[in-house]
Amino acid sequence: MDYKKYTLKNGLRVVLVPMKEVTTATALICVGTGSRFEDKHENGLAHFLEHMFFKGTKKRPKTMNITKELDALGSQHNAYTGKDRTGYYTKVPSGKIIDAMDVLNDLFVNSTFKSAEIKKESGTIVQEINMYEDMPSRLVYDIFETLLYGKDHPLGREIIGTKKNVTGFVRKDFITYLERCYTAQNTVVCVAGNFPQGKVLKKIREDFGQMRAGDKPAYEIYVGMQECAALKIKDKKTDQTHFMVGVHTGGFNHKDRYVLSMLANILGGGMSSRLWEEVREKRGLAYSVQAIVDFYPETGFFAAKAGVEHENLVQTLQIILKEMKKIATNGATKEEFDRARSGFEGRLAFSMETSDTVASNFAEQEAVRGDIIVPTESLKRIHKVTRGDIQRVAKEIFVRENLNCAIIGPQKKNEKAIKNMLKF
Image (cartoon, rainbow, N blue to C red; front, side, top):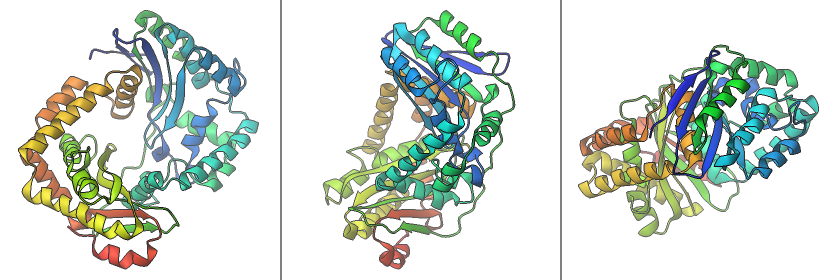
């Protein structure tokens, strides 16, 4: 997939990805910042700031001015905050992209951050925190990362922040964070799909040419060393016990990144994976079970995730750990290795079909990594992975000292027994 990259005088990067075969275009502004760039007292500010961009500009003073104009263009639009990236996007029929960019660019460059809106929106975010507390299948992910990285490291804190922080932020806090992290050199504007390249580039130059340059913000590197298996239980009355069990890995620049992706595919990447067969098909212990990998520049993790009846937690954990140990001992069969690689190729192909997925792929790579790995290069790298690599990496990471388990459910009474069985 061909793309063009431009850099404005102030350091802002522009990535244009033409897709003549589609009928839509997506504009996405991605900033290389998120909750890992906050200190403890700022925790939740990056996410709150994302909300505030939609609360009015000088030209469009109210939220409804923004949303009504985008809706009239047939837009799908939203924003998101991660630990190392924040994105704002609009996807529209191809002929509406310039008009949609006028709105998107305006809210990004000219938002007013009124104190009255900040106070009002804090209530909305408190309700969002409450909502996530009632979603254990999602919340367990946050608990797992807190276990991995510790609550004193930014990677171990929840993106959404605490109620105390959220209700205490004032306008000055937003402006300080904005000036530190929302610089031109830390921002990527990506447009993907069917669009007039000349007009789009001209529009970006006009709207972002005066954006403050500034340096990229620094962040705290994770250098933790785990010495024994760790367990964290959030004792809560739930209909199911949800859990994640997994290990530390290298980050997205590590030589084994694609090996880890393949390993996750084999163990729990689909309905023909080992965990799906053993946990769901043979025993009916879970509706869904999956293996996932996630990466930051310097660190990452491999984990299995499921929700089960309370009394089935120990059995399900034992099965998962047994399968992890088995692949480290015996490796993968040729059949499942080939199937996992085909699955990777398929998902990659699907991700390149729509303008929004392409925009997020290219923009986030450029914003976080500083370079772009195109799909053809990803395929080359996945085809270099061997069955021997799968077993080698499994042996390296599936060791007891590297094991972590996060649980949500009424399981506190079983803590000692669960901790004792956390071994391969």
